View: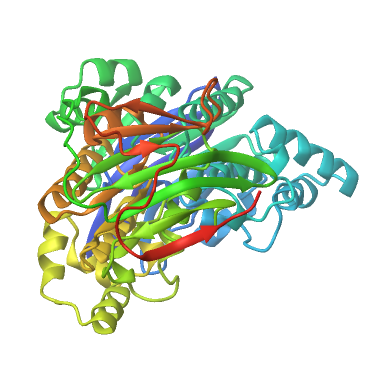
Amino acid sequence: MSDLLKATAVSVRAGLSQLVEPVSLTLAAGRPVTILGETGSGKSLLAQAIIGTLPAGLRAGGQVDVEGCSLDLAHPRALRDLWGRVIAVLPQEPWLSLDPLMRARAQVAEGHALVRGLNRAEAGQAADRDLAGLGLAEASASRPDQLSGGMAQRLALAAARAGGARIVVADEPTKGLDIARRDDVIALLMREVVQGGALLTITHDLTLARRMGGELIVMLKGRVIERGPADQVLSQPRHDYTRRLVAADPASWPRRVPRQPVGKPVLRAEGLSVRRGGRRLFRDLGLDLHPGQIIGIEGPSGCGKSTLGDVLLGLCRPEQGKVIRGEGIAARRFQKLYQDPPSAFPRHLPLGRALEDLVRLHGLDRGRIGGLMARLRLDPVLLGRRPDAVSGGELQRLALLRLLLLDPVFLFADEPTSRLDLITQAEVTELLVETARETGMALLIVSHDPDLLAGAADRVIRLGDHEGSPTGADLVRDPAAQTGYRPADKPGFGTRVAAEVSGA
């Protein structure tokens, strides 16, 4: 087993503050290394220091030995010659790594052509094989904004691997993916390992960490608290934090007692039919959302989960059907928590500015920001940073904070915890549920994790192709007398129509 990369005493500082204490690790051919930890633990910063992609204002220390050269991490420019050719990088946020104007096939072919040196025809054929292997053959002509979050993540993986590098650094490679696609990505990464490559994975996904095997490093607050063989660390954790992390798996959550619908619905959908890319996602779907009610939506990637939420919010139009909002409710109180928070924040403005602009625009109480930040375990120093200078989990919690300032009556939460470690995921899910119950906010949660939905939602609707289902959707759980989900019904409240289309 040969060592492909050796990192020695890698650290990260911001001015006089040390964000990551010195860590050493070795990436050997055929042996994966996984770094596990909560949001903000420093695991992504450690990986960025090793490959030379730290955000501006942060400084790395230590050295990396690769291809017979010793490189000083305090001078990261020398690492750029290794990108794509020696080290393939899969960033945490696919939206920040993909060209928004370039179609999927071209993005992957570019790596094969410019890094591997294939001619145009060969590069295109290689890109086709890569996309087909990740279930993206039908999306080859699509731009990133036309893809679901999970599809964008798979495209970013294909583009990162196109240069043929033997060392892969994958930052949260399975976030936002359904179970089948998650397993596909794990199998793809493991194939690289079996073929003699080296793999460094940053994750908060326990399933991924278990399946990868190899060496597991657990980080908390910028330092390593436990490390060893993955199966040993996860089955016999020594540190209290590691034990809490394992116990926070949604499969261990208690099942919530479903709430009976009360009051008039704040939103009603009738006879919704939706097509995308020439394919019908669902038809004749009806749905009532009552105050304080929590409904979960699950299904494979690309089945229409996000599209359903966008139709309910009036962000896109259905092929047929209509959406009616409760009478007298301001439009700004119908909100969406995006699957990919970078798409919800201006890239070049400090995060605090985004909150201040919202407060000023709607005349909100600025004093609530501090309390919500404390409840979401957010350090006020984050408000002075731009979106690319905070972790994905921190950015998602800031996005949630911004929405809660608006006191929504309906919140469509699109994979709201896909970027969060297990402990923070449990806390944020509980916060969403408590907010729904305390304020009467109707909550629609999309998730790929059936255990999470079973522990949080009153009802769960599964979208996809189901035999015998005329709608392409199944009601998985309905313990209450009124389902809140039906093929069609007559409107009995409100006057505001958010979306209405008729015709075949």
